[in-house]
Image: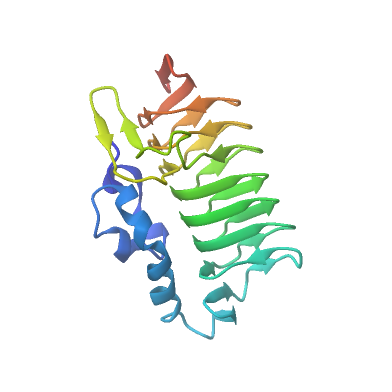
Length: 219
């Protein structure tokens, strides 16, 4: 339930060819920077403007004057990057997305129609098609003991060997306001997370996460 095939419709990201190389989404995190640079160099200059070195912005996107776009990054068609957004580096942001006020992105892939609209931190993560993070919800991408991140499922634990790993959100995932997605969180397609949750596990597809002991199927 946590492979790339399980989580994502790859027709909704420019990273399709790149992601198809991997089984698990966290395997793709190390190469995001180089992938963006290679992909950016192939973009049509009639559609994308390279506003600074290795920063490509689609001509229909809106970037507010106070936003910071760090290299490398790609901002897709009709996307809004709002006031004081901080794209630190290595961010592929798809079409029709929202990167809201005071949000920070670092080493991420945002599929088309993703919304991180208010005070979100998203690092070392992949957010699927039409996924949405409520105001103040964040990904925590490093364990406090600095040990490698483990993906916890009901039947098995997967040691990823990675020090930095935030969250993998499948397509159409809704994360409630002020929730924390701890390192190694994986949320299956069409699932919802209650506001103010603290998630540290795999959440199956088509589920509602109420707390770590109460995950129910959506009806």
